[in-house]
Length: 275
Length: 216
Image (cartoon, rainbow over all chains, first blue to last red; front, side, top):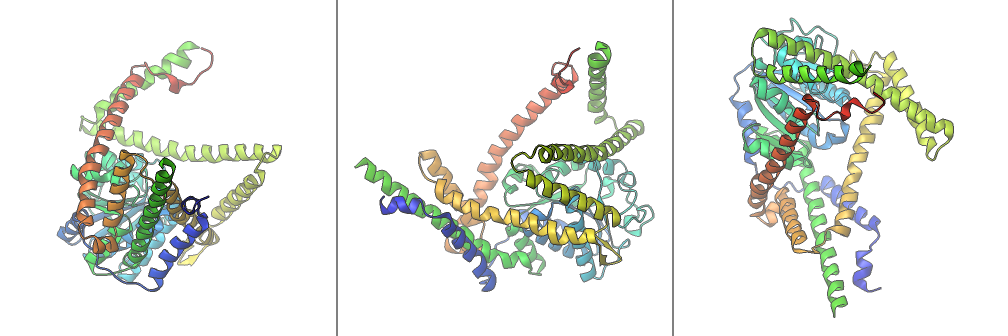
């Protein structure tokens, strides 16, 4: 077996070790390279900035703990921005396995920003029915969620004053890790009830949402950890996403180097077999 | 019997399909009220579907344990995990925390489910790197194009890539916004047209496989 052949059959544990180091070292010794802001993330930020105080901002936390590393920082950055702008925040989830995480998230950021439950924000929790929940909210929000996550009746909550359905929402953002997520919010929500919609998603599904972005069906898109880091930079409150970008930079570079090496050896073997 | 088994479901499907397709274009309060009621039913049925799903899972794994099939130990773990979580969840009234204090259900969620799901997802990074090393080879012209595009996008999506190759950010954005978006849109249009055609076939009774088999 030649050296090139041996290298192509390298023990995968060595690759695991390389990726492990590339993730760990930048987290321990951050470099802090500058992050360029993309127009799709800037659009979400600009729309939030344009909203007057006490506008209704709906955040649908449509992911479970598996996508927490990418979408949690997006949700934190969006909530911080909304609370800083004194918007009325209506949070919810379409993913039952994400309910506890979403509750912790909303409680944590609202405490940090000194906001009051029921007056400045409400967490509606989860309701069965998948995408039917969106249609039901578009028809009558109080039928879809008669009570909030803590069991309080949603009718009469100051945060929902003047809000009857999705038509009264000024801006909605779905942070989706799959289905139901951003696409469902467009198809069953925005298309019929005419509110402005933005999206956030994991890096894996971001390319699939570009057609919605290009056609204006969503006004902006926060894609993966990079999108979260961009949003954190925009609001001037750097958090986990910015810290994670160095690790992501290193792992991306490591994968590119590994792919280049494997191709060099592959062509070496091919040339040897031809000659 | 044929009427109850075949014709009646087909009739219900046709009437419901046509009524709700038309409902979208009728903004009358009665039409909106009908949609509200129907979606409320859907939510209730969704709740029952959850119970049905869990029951079916229990049956499937109970059979595995009874017959001591390969991997029956995992079924036992699933059983213990599910029953334990249901019992704890019922005791905590489905709440992760009460007055700021974490319940046992919250503990299971925060310290078992969250790290387990996070770990499963994180492991992917290692396997993707290993798989990329083994299979991402420029075996043909098409594979070479894919390889170059992937490298550019990977560089353009991280600050280090943009620092080393300043153009990669703009090129990656162009690939995502123009090439990727147009191809995805074409696929999306195709899938949507297929869905419309299938819906018509179901509404007009051409496609009947959803009714299931069996004697008429």
